[in-house]
Length: 296
Image (cartoon, rainbow, N blue to C red; front, side, top):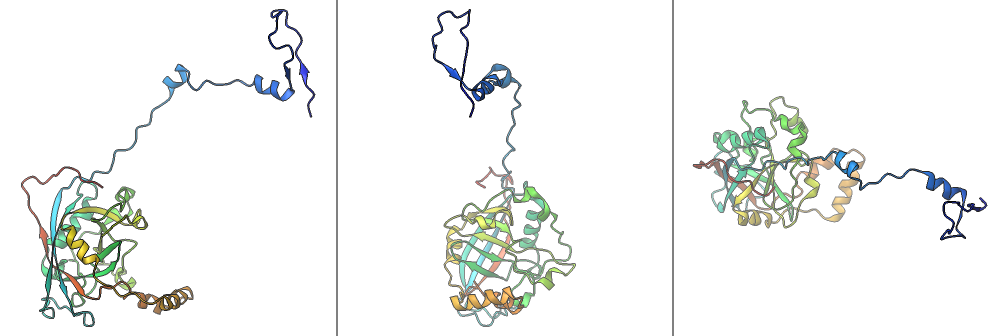
């Protein structure tokens, strides 16, 4: 332990105000260390100011519509056919008007528009809402066979390279009514994805009531619902298949040991117990194509 050191009387200060003040070697070392003033005019003037990056451009450049219908007693046989001939007792649910962020992710928006405006056999028209996650989102646009109500993209649809660009993931799934390209939530079969003609066109729409942070930085938000949130709520309220807890535990164990049957069994989880499908879709032309930015 260091012994205290007494400063000798200074000839310049005959009347020292603190005659009994003692210092240790450690305190003398601290006092000898130069101290920089953080509030000096020199340091404040020389500091560089960093400007925050601009917010993502959520200007609505395009609008499309989607009409949804429901087949109340149509869960067992899901073979819709190209003309929905097996769904004669269809009931309309209503129309969604979607605003798309074409300045932020132009390629994603272009492909989505193409799938809304293309011929029936190569569009979202007549395809199913594949899964509904209550209180979160629903998924549609799975690629596969038309006779199963799945999507068959046209061969000339451009491959979406924005899925590897960081700017495409800037927007968060922060509220109900956001339209997002499925990447992490994509339910397409692995053998389908290995096809050189595969184009990911599966999308989700958040239903609320709260945000879905588990989707952030993994799926591409590219639009928002402008009209028809009551339709979104109606779809979200449709009952889905939910396995018992014991079945879930067995499935988790089977997946853990690498049993491929676990993935096959999960394919029907969260399926709607009523057949919900996109009865029509297309683009809405407006006089002024660029709208004021909406909330991200």
